[in-house]
Image 1 (cartoon, rainbow, N blue to C red):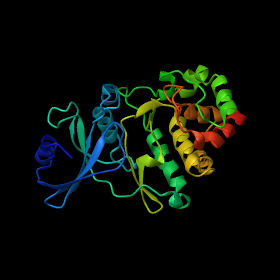
Image 2: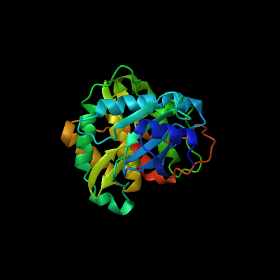
Image 3: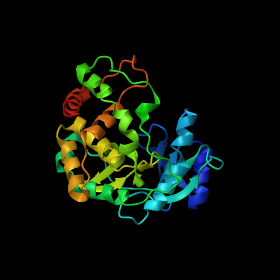
Image 4: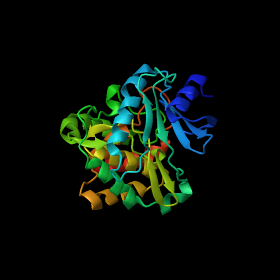
Length: 282
């Protein structure tokens, strides 16, 4: 339930009365609520509610707002920033009020109808934008903690081959770049109307670097949902830009799935076939 302070702030900046609120699905560092106003308008209140201060400071409301303003009118469907409270002085926590973007996340059965070429074209438009200096360089999450073969995997040898490949040693060369990156580009951060992409959401991890970081994230997640779809997306991006998704990037993306504690039991069996395929091509 939204705190009264958050609702009052939304009413002030939107100059209208909020008649109902509905919590939207998703969100690890933030929570989103659909706001219905008495005059028929709809907005989205996005509040940074993580109890981990690191998340609030690094993947911040200010970082997302900076990128959404930059993307306005750039042929990438993103919400408009209607109001912002970077430090939570007016709302109860750091927050943004965004325009409501219609659409739904696709079901597994709808994957085959998605226009992956159009998705690749939208991503390429984002990558054509030079990232502002205020954005940090892309940094894989996995290299912030020790890495090890996950417990319970049926692809232990393949995981070990990836770990032994020395992926991190080539990071400076592979990840260099000044392109604007989404930073967490996967299907769960998109909305669709039928087969047509209607919105790209969730930009607080936006950064600057090599565009293949975004391509690898989307391709990796698509392959988990439907084997072969990641390759289709990678080829679509190549057709649009000439950029080729290499096994190095696929392996680096897989390493981001590993738990912070190598001894933590985690069900990574869904990635086993993908891990074996990438390891064989390194």
